[in-house]
Every structure is written in structure tokens, then in C-alpha cells.
Image (cartoon, rainbow, N blue to C red):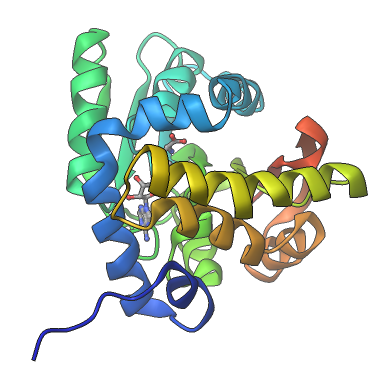
Length: 250
Ligand SMILES: C[S@@+](CC[C@H](N)C(=O)[O-])C[C@H]1O[C@@H](n2cnc3c(N)ncnc32)[C@H](O)[C@@H]1O
């Protein structure tokens, strides 16, 4: 009997762990080729600015080694790389092969393939030795992982003591008028554009707002990072809290 695909609401609310991760990965495979264009359109071009600000939280080091988790099309990895010094190295890791292939193309086109390595790995099982990296970054990935606490604990494990984790993710707008506007955009306009204009069949336009709504808000994410063992956990809201950058120290 043919298996029915889960709805976006099922993926975020009732599914967890491996089943959720598989469904999310199918979606990223389907949209990988248009991910950058979609991102620019849906965020009104803001996503790149958000990533630049996130990269500015990475302390420059000499001969540094950085890891960008859920790197996708490698924007953040490319922004972090100049902060790792002349002999620096960056690993851009992602679970999804199709997204990573787009990232690899971009890295090669920018002539950075000798310093940025694209590698397929799950955020929950990174496969590196303890205390490997001078910094770990992630952009818009944590919302998608099957087990958030496991992912941030695994990230902490591979970080050197004293190093920083910089996490860029959608969060909760701080003003009630902005929340109302954002909800209308996310739950009315976006699904309408998805079905009527983009004729989307992947469900990504419904998954995106649903995953943002169910992701821990600023304070809750701080608690989760502390539970994973991080210290000095702080965050900065961008665009009224639509997005937040959490910075945490091992
Ligand atoms: C919204 S995209 C963000 C890509 C990129 N970081 C950016 O900011 O444009 C989320 C990425 O996280 C990846 N991802 C989702 N779950 C993951 C997991 N468990 N482990 C590693 N990567 C994951 C997806 O494959 C996807 O490429």
C-alpha cells in the first residue's frame, strides 16, 4: 500500500526524531536548486544581512578551524572563513547532499574550495573528535533537527574549551503588532504564494512558518543551551526578534 506523505503540520507537531528528520530532508532535497532565490524573495533580501551580523560574532583567530552546521548553500561558511586567518580552515557540514552540492558549487565559484570543505554529517552525530573547533556557527538549521538538545550537546562536544557557538535562527517577534503582521505573512500570504504562485508541491511554504512557530523562543533556547552545558549564553534580536543570534561559550 502506498505510504501517504505527512503534512507540514504533522512534521512539526506530532513527528519527532528520525521520522521528522527524514521528512524535512526530502523537502530540502526538492528545493535545493532554488533555495537561495527563495530565501532572498521570502526574506526580502534580509537573510544575507542577518548572516553577516552572525558572522561578526565570530572572534577572529589565526590558523583557526571553524565548523558551520547545516551549512546548506554555504553563505555563512563563506562569511566565517576570512575570520579564521590566513591558514584557517572551515568545514561546512550538512545532512542533505543536494543542499551541500549547491554549497560546494558556490564555494568553488568563489575560489575557496581549498579552505572550505563541504561534508555530509548530521548535527546530532557530527563525527569529529572532542574539542576540535575554534568556533561553531549555524544558520537556520537548528529548527529542523530531529533532537535539538542532542544537536547542541553534540556541537558543544566538538568545540574547544572557551570557544563560541553562534546560532542564527528564527525566533519570536518582540512587538505584538509585528507578531500579528508576521503571522499574517506566514500563515496566510506565504501558503497562498506557495500554492497559487509557485505551485509548490513540497509543502515547504507551510512547513517554514509551522517550524518557526514551534521552535523555542529566545529565552527557551537560552535554557536549552545552558542544559547542554554552555555558559555565558546571550542573544541579540534582529528585525524586531523575527530572527535572533544566540552566542554561547563552552
Ligand atoms: C534552512 S537551511 C539553512 C541553510 C544555510 N545555513 C543558510 O543559512 O542559508 C537548513 C539546513 O539545515 C540542514 N539540516 C536539517 N537538519 C539537519 C541535521 N539534522 N543535521 C545537519 N543538517 C541539517 C538542511 O539540510 C538544510 O540545508
